[in-house]
Amino acid sequence: SIGAVAFSTVVARLTFPYLDRTDVAMIYLLGIVVTSTRTSRWPALVATLLSVAAFDFFFVPPYFTFAVSDVRFLATFGVMFVVAYVISRLTLQIREQAMASRKREMSTAALYALSRELARERKKERIYDISLRHIGEAFKGRIALLVANEQGEGGLVVTQKLPLTFEVD
Image (tube, rainbow, N blue to C red):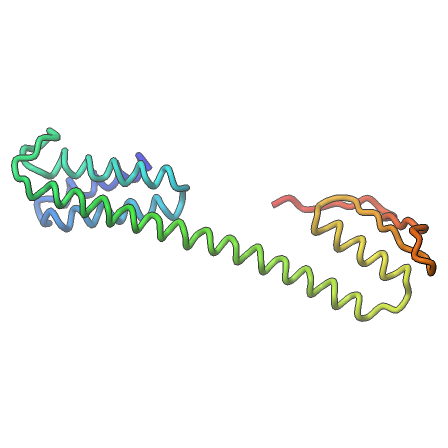
């Protein structure tokens, strides 16, 4: 977040003679959006606070101080902070929803693969193997099934025959 604010400040300083202060504020907002897409909540909040402070320090007269000669800039700082905070929250929320969507997609694909394999099998032993493999992959561990007999009593224990190997993301 500090790097994004520093980069935004350098770009804003280089373009300041050609841009208005509102355009400079947009450069900082772009830096906040980039920070929000790549980091978590706290770095995005730090980028928001630092962007408002850097905007005040470098682009509001008197320059290179945090003193404000025109009270109207206080409203500008407030609006800039609120807009930057809302943008960062929405960006983080979109990223969290995308991650949740990917997890749901993986779960759905795993359930589909399990049901497809189970629908093709008729032998109990093969159904046990398929179930063990899919459940083991879902929980990333070794699984044992307890199968009840005709009287409803637990009797047969089925375990995986080979150790499982999993890819680590």
